[in-house]
Amino acid sequence: MTGLSPSRIDSRASSASTRTCAAGLPSRRRAAAPRAIAPTAEESRAALHRLSLDQAGESEALRASGEQLRLLADALPLFVAFVDRDQRYRLVNRAYEEWFSRPRDALHGRTVREVLGEAVYAERRPYIEAALRGEIVRYEAPMTRADGSVRETEIEYRPRRDASG
Image (cartoon, rainbow, N blue to C red; front, top):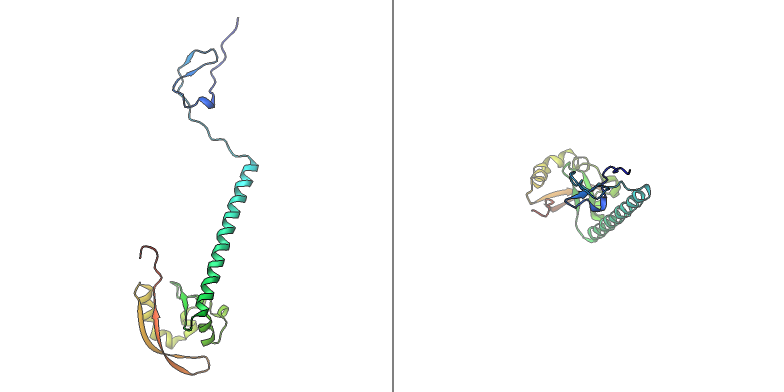
């Protein structure tokens, strides 16, 4: 005499609404959702490698873009600087570097207060804060070079805006 074997679920037929048991009789069990199969170690390594290559490509593109921005800024005959919300210099061009007689690495990461000094910073602070609030600010003020010479300058602060404005 042969017995019936227990019902088994065939993953290829998991979307079927009715199932049959091993003996070919209808089963009363509901179809189970297909289960995700864990990736093999090799598949995981391959996925991580692709992700790493994608990130390396993005990193290289960002580096190249940053280099192009520096080259463009250096070609301009005026001071160009990017100052973040903490009022730290993140980018300065060659004209800025030459005016303050400091290499850009010595300016990068320093605060506006540190670079300009307390007295000049106190005069410019309201303008800087207005720009950080989103206003375009334009004014004239004397600038003192590292050698002590003074020159009247037109200063403009433009807030950084995202795609939404």
